[in-house]
Image (cartoon, rainbow, N blue to C red; front, side, top):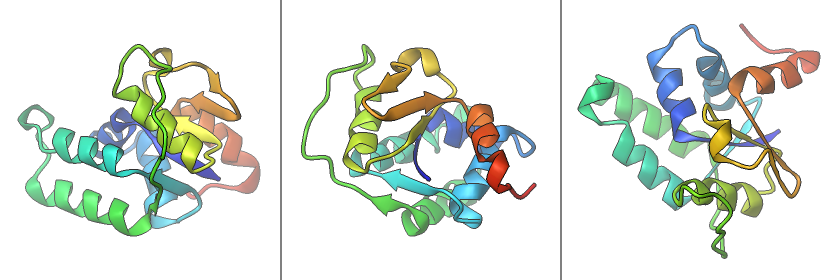
Length: 139
């Protein structure tokens, strides 16, 4: 299953060890049960957000997470620009998902995105885990 992870999912996954977002991260980075799609624009956003002092993540946590993403993700280079969402940076996630033929964008801010863009569904981490439940998911 091909997915794009909104930055808030990555942040929540790091800050909440028992949360659904952490489970999604494990499925993509450790278990590789999900194909996480990344574009250069999304990686730049991750690199800008994760070190923010208010998140209180250590330099090691940030580095390890970004390195794991670089290693596990499938990189895509969108050749088009979308103007679908009002929040301009969110369009980069739609572009990555469309270019990489993702099934889902996983976000904690579903209201910032359309419910669906072409064949791409926008879901929260909990919903993605429900969709994966029939094929099994490590705890």
